[in-house]
Length: 480
Image (tube, rainbow, N blue to C red; front, side, top):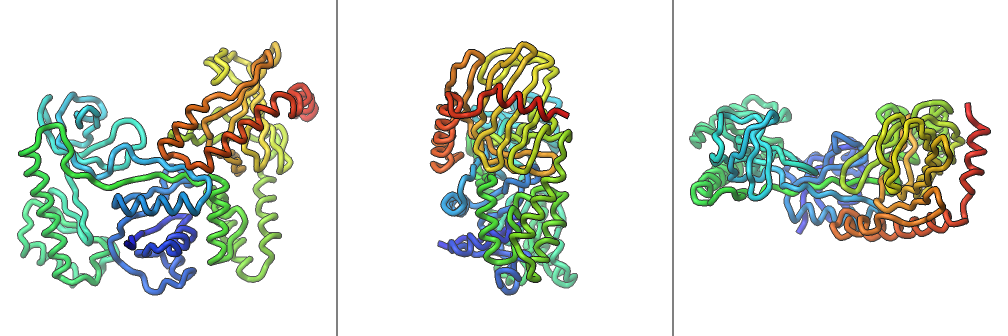
């Protein structure tokens, strides 16, 4: 079975090429993608699955839609794009529950969904504790409680139906005569108490198709509230759609660069650099030059050199620490003490209190961490010092970091290696790494390379790497 997919965002060209080659149908491609892949006229149709950029992090995409279509698409990405991480929403977006009101809070109304809880926000009326309420999940939920609404919206192939009044149109439906015909059609069907939205996929569709879609949605709506009268609460009455976040690591992006490069001039590091807003125009201009015959390798080296020269010794740099739980942590920023394009040393000074992860020893004001970052390496080497000397070394196992203006970004792979102040070396959190494999967050490729790099780090700390005192003497010699 062929599934229809609509793709938007900075990965659109590469993903369109990958999915076309895997038998997917592309719906409503952008003008640029149509030109690059010779797709012909834009096709307006309701997709089985949507791909959009994640508004919080450009290294991620949101995949949302039909269960089978999403599974097929995710399988293609796992097979064709290396070293990705995949997070599934804990609740299906647009699923509908018959919930029970538990309590009012400052953020909304706490409701019981069946042994799990959600937060009803923007309620249309006041509810009493113990009252039953029809509530719909509004968006994907990666952690915590889902946010729900007591206004249910159902989505069809060409239209959407929700409680209310009136008719609305996708901005691409511009013909006023067509709009009037559709308004009259809604009035003729007698859809009282419903607000109707016509999507772009309704353009060019027959009246019979649109009527069938609207009647189907109205019937589903009635069935939902019929189930509410028949079902016990709390319970689920409409399954909604699937949603996944896909994390593209630095190596994933290199593969997507190659795929994009098979269709249009593409600079080395295209997708990594496009994740940085300040570099977008420079990337576009560089690729404009490649398209006109300039040497790609020379321009790629020049762009990377431009980016690296912007990272000056003494400048502030942030650590974007993406985790396999789906969270992105901003670690304490540091100061660049050395950077030659291949090796970076960052100094961080701690002022607060707490406990060092892995060591279970306290953080003291004035403690210093030197982080050694090698371009292309699967590890970050953290050396923790107090005024009295070494507190320990912490080797973070992660995907090769992306070095961008003012920022280092990587995906943490859960497993780490530590050396205590008395010289004991051990690998920690192996069971956590295995858990993420079992849950499908990572594939066997990331799991196995994380184990390999952890063993290499363990061997290195036991004798293969430069001693800490040698590194510290070097750092001391380059202090500014």
